[in-house]
Image 1: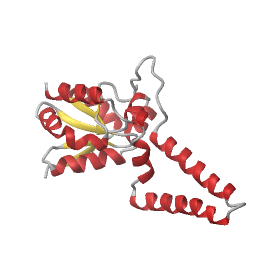
Image 2 (image 1 turned 180 degrees about the vertical axis):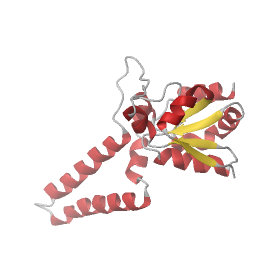
Image 3 (image 1 turned 120 degrees about the horizontal axis):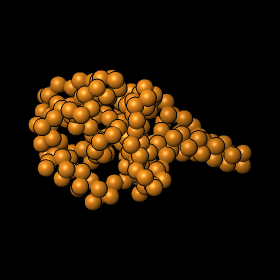
Image 4 (image 1 turned 30 degrees about the vertical axis):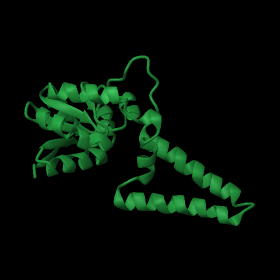
Length: 188
């Protein structure tokens, strides 16, 4: 098992030119702003990218990035299981931006909302729907209770089933050509 480490945003910024940065967020989140030069490999495509990441790690240290550091830590553990060393960015792109470091955004594209915002909208809408429908059909309140239980479970386990579901929506999925180009760039 390879070791995993973490870098603060300032440490990563200082070493930025010597790192291969992998952003494990959805393509929509990546498009909303990413560390300059980062390659987008969504967390759910990590296994497919293992050969390319192994090749890239032989040329430069890998830095895994997400919005907060949770998904990149998951990715680092997965890579460690495969013998690939990688560091994570503490606090993710949020910390990077808060310290005044620039984020790249593709020109002329309208990026979908960040995943946490999508989750809040979906969860809030479902809770509200359950409460409104519960006025006429009391059993509909179970929808609100189920979402509340899911949010508590999400907080306790630091996972998010709703985010996994939302990540499968078309605007959150990478185009296969984009992922193929990223993998080719990492192996080349």
